[in-house]
Structures are given as C-alpha cells and as structure tokens.
Image (tube, rainbow, N blue to C red; front, side, top):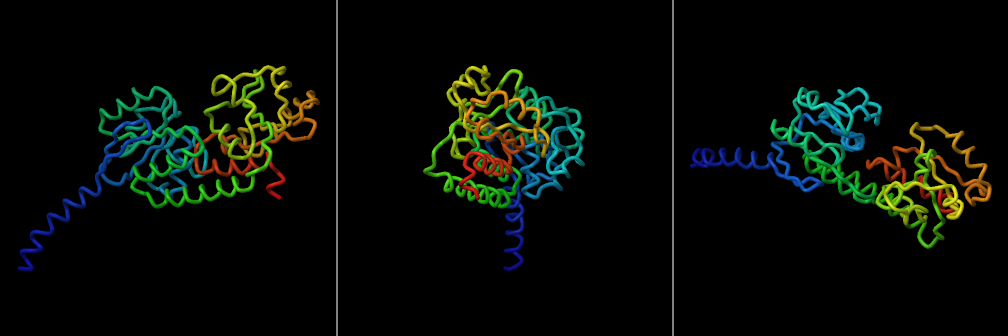
Length: 294
C-alpha cells in the first residue's frame, strides 16, 4: 500500500512543482508576461531597475545592465547592453536572459516584439508618480519570484514617507521652484516625480499649473511667482553647482535668493524611480522645512 501511494504521489509532486515555478504576470503597461520558473539570468535595461534588483539582493542573477547603470558601484562591473532608450538586442540575446526588465520609453513595441519572437519574456515597469515606485518594486519582486525582499524594501520606504509627512503636516507650504536647466529655464511640472516629492515634502510646486511636464519659464515669470525655495539638481554626487548658484545672486528680489534658500540635490535621488527616491524625499522636505528636521 505504501509503495502504491508513493507511486501515485511522486508524479503529482512534480506537476505541482512545475505549476509553482511557472507563472503569468501583467506588467505595468498591461502586457501579459509568462515566466518559466524563477529567473536566473536577468537583464536590466534601466538604472532604476538595476538599483531595485541590487536592493533586493538579486545581483548574482543580473547578467546585463544599461550603460547608464552606475549605482550601486558594483553595477559598473556588469555587462553593458546599451542605453535604456535604444538597447542592443544582439547584446541582450547573447547573454541568454530568461527575463528582461525595461521601462516604458523608446521604441518599446519593436524592442518587445523582437525579444518575444525569441521567447524572451520582457517585463515593462512604468511608475508614474513617487508612490507608484513602491508598487513597481513589489511587482518586480513578484516577476523575479522574490516577493519578500521587495516587501521589506517597500515597508521601509512607506515608514520613511510617513515620518516625513508627520513632520511637515500642518506647516505652511512655501513656493518651491525646481530648475532642470538654465538655457532655457526648464522646470518640473505636474506628473513628474519632483512635483510629487515637493508636495509630499510640504511645499507647493511653482510649476504645478504650467503646461506640460517640463515647462519653460521666462525670468519675468519666475520673478512674478517669487519662489521661496529653489532646488537645483546635480548630475554628479557632491557637485555644489557653484556657477549656477552664483547665477541666481543677480536676482536679489526673489525670496529664495534673499533668504539664501537655494539648495543642490543629487539628481538621481529625485528623478530616478528607485528605492533611493525616499532619500530624495527626505532631502526635499529638509530643504523646504529645515525647522522640522533639526
């Protein structure tokens, strides 16, 4: 009788294991993605995805990254597959990935269709605001069969966001201007991560009512808006942007200039939808409400 039970159960165990290791997911642009087992050879097509995978402890499964993936430093040692807008399909295929994780930019349809024709599953991330970044992390955890590390990251981020909101709650919301470029003057409007961070950090984005995600401003418009806080973004960590900060000193009637409230933040922390975005939120909130973060 025991031998008969074993004979019957062993095939069932293999079947159930096969079912558990194969799964179908819906990515963040609504596509169906079929993954046959926990991915062991992952290619990341974007810096934020690479950061997420490293934060989840999946760096050993990561076989290729984009040329822009520079954080954490160990990402520099990974094989490069080109930029995130125009990655090299040849390099990706040569790495024999069992999962490619990309973003909703560039010629997405052509990229996905070509890999699909080679039976390479492609998961597309598409967080549209700062809080959706956490949802995206959880979904990447699911498609990589590593949900618990993703949940730990999200719980930590949620707690840090709550702490910031508790500190700025009930305080005045000063006018905040974020400048992306000087020639011409370009800011970040509604629908950008920076707009969300300014709002969550207790400020009011000067560009929130402007047309487009990245509106241009004349100096006359900025003088009229009179920002109380100006946020600059450095592409190089630790760069004080001395020249740009000095440029603002000619406009001494602007409240932020008069009060010495021009701050330089790390661009990667406020523009990149990764786990470090919560660190960017803390920096933004501290710049807007220094009194709340002694």
